[in-house]
Image 1 (cartoon, rainbow, N blue to C red):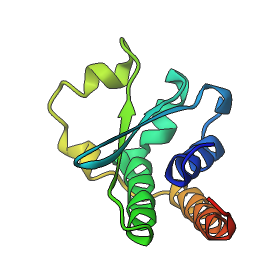
Image 2 (cartoon, rainbow, N blue to C red):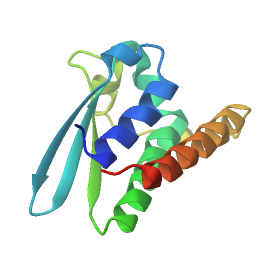
Image 3 (tube, helix red, strand yellow):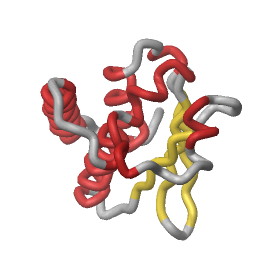
Length: 129
């Protein structure tokens, strides 16, 4: 059975992506804490990263909250597929225009996802894991 942190990330990510069957999470533990390596379909990378990295940041924040509840340190690494546009772009210097992206109606969807994830976090409290 997957650990609560891994199950939580899987639940949130599968709710966001178009190809939930391609979501894979590799969990490793070392002296720095728990590392969750997330792999998704290349077409879903933009949805996981979000505008200016907002979605990825939100997932990491929720994971940090889960870690605080269980007195653990969780880190999320999003594994980018080789040859993807994102992988190539990650080696370039970020543009200031990307960092200052305007707010749009996508934020409402993000808020809905956060609310659903919070419900999932509350559901994890009910599980005997």
